[in-house]
Image (tube, rainbow, N blue to C red; front, side):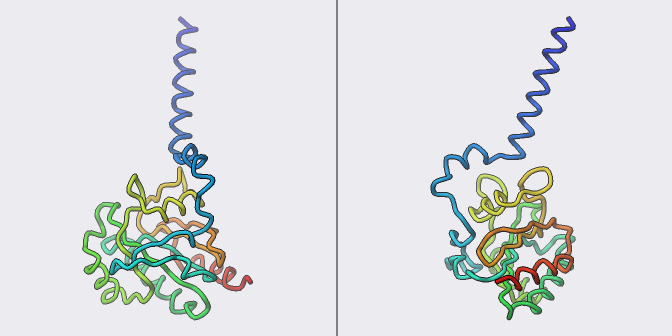
Length: 200
């Protein structure tokens, strides 16, 4: 009887461990198959702008980038857009760009069409940085760029994007160097941006 209980506990332990490792590193198996042709930097991706035009991210080669999944009806929206605007205005002439990707996966807080989103971003939030086509950041239909970003910098309890306004900082070589949680105010990591802009 004691041996049976021990066996059950051991089986349960290994089952939980397997689930934990799978959800913590969901792409570990597929990444081995992709190793040969896997992207080396964000410059290997092409995305679509808010009008549906293709934009090779190699266009941003040599710039420091902040890539953000945005939403217009989130409790974090006003404060994030305000601080993102401050950073963009301050550093855009020094080789800094913000790339905003609308996403409706978190409590449907970006429900509009691309046209409606563009109007809201420009008129309500006065954002001048580039806004791209609405995408998924998690799941089977996640944009390839976001699959790459998450594989480069995982977050707390796994790589999935947890909420709106998760931020990825990319250096001048197109490498992801940092990831900031949704509740981290953009101005809080201004020094990180300055350091990357100052690097040769």
